[in-house]
Amino acid sequence: MVIVCVISGVVLILSALVMFVPGLSKIYESSLKRGLSDVKLSRIRAVNVRKPTDDYIRREGRIRLVIVMAFALLVLALGIAQVKKSQESGRILSVNRPEFGQGSEEMVVVAQVENETLPISITVGEKIPDDAQTDHFFEVRYMEAVKVVLGQNSDFDHVEHDLNLITGMADGTEIEWTISNTALMNIMGELSDDIAEGGEKLTLIMTMSYAQYSRSFEICATVYKAAAVYAFSDELTDYVNEAIADSEEDCVKLPQTYNDSEISYENPQDETFTWLMALSLIAALLLWLVRDNMLENAYKKRNIELMIDYPQIVSKLSILFSAGLAIPTAWDRLVRDYEYSLGLGERSRFGFEEMRITALEMKNTGYREGVFENFGKRCDSYSYRKLGSILDQSMKLGTVNLSTYMQQEAAQAFELRKQTANRIGEEAGTKLLLPMMLLFALVLVMVVVPAWIGMNM
Image (tube, rainbow, N blue to C red; front, side, top):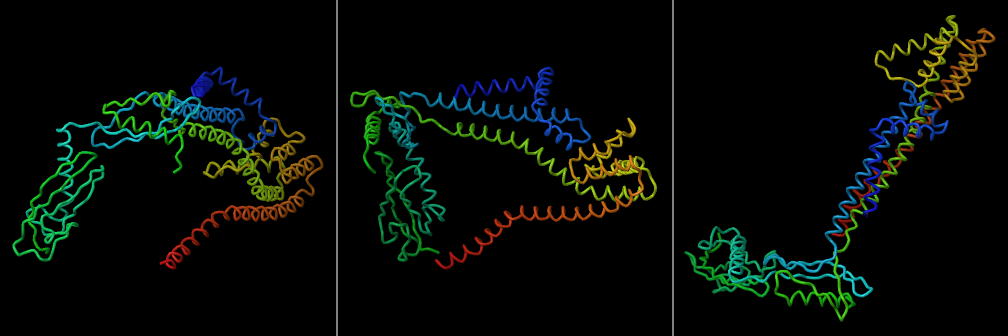
């Protein structure tokens, strides 16, 4: 456990240094970037169109460092708690008796005899009280018992309701009752119907017993008519408990030998912290893997959004081409309309963001061959590749039949969008199967359980 604490502390310190020391941070970020494949880098760029890839890697690296630091700190804290617990539960030579009235204390210790380790349960009796302590103990118990015995009655001078003659208390005190006239009240404390008008005197003797001690209290009342298999571990347990019982010391020394063999005692190890550390490490690993899965999910959502955007892009380009605009002009016009909608508060769209990047390339360097094909490659979709190829070919060979091609492509795109919507709906329905099954099971339980209980009654 000490080794685990040391490792956790080292990991925590190193993570903090990498987080807050600029030089180490740059080395860490560059190593992360080198460890990423080209496919993963392209997906990072695809889902973070307006942000540099380095910013995403830097943010993701810091998130992972925070995860490592948090769990290292948690494991370190649990490890320290476990070590402290182990130190407290080390070798024991004696046990303290509980105060009188607290009851015997049962403990489980691990006894090592020769080469055998056995868990045994020992019972440590209370301290032996003097007369003053015993009198005080029973007086306190008497006052507590009287409150319960009176029940609905205000005092013993006007007992008009049945008394609650309890036979014991929560701390193990036993109570016996002696009634001077059982014709007026039975042993259960119930009043008789033969009580004379004006009430009758009655004497109750309450005898309280605790362990080998007892005290009797006389109460004068006026009652009115009511408005296993024996193994070696068991033998050792009996031996230790007998030794404790024979001792009258406040601090009872446990026997150190048994049948000429030395005995050592230890508190059993608490495995709670160990399990918590194991669960923490598993949670950290799962959280680390979830970060990778989040990128894949974001990339899938981006591809779905591209398919949804495609019909709108093609139809708008077709209208602009039909109006006589050149390809670069129509492209730039569509991008400016998109940026204007962003200024009105609409959310960004991946398809139009890729168009914006292509528009910036043409604005900075002018049109060059393959710029639209690169647009299709970045989108990584057959439909966008097809669109990029049509536009590049039109830039080379002319735009005579471009409007016709674009109209056909728009019709096909809308049909493809319908298929995509149907597929998304089917996937959503599949995801709802589990909640629906759980709800169905809950309804069955609500219907079947009351019916089953009614049949048994």
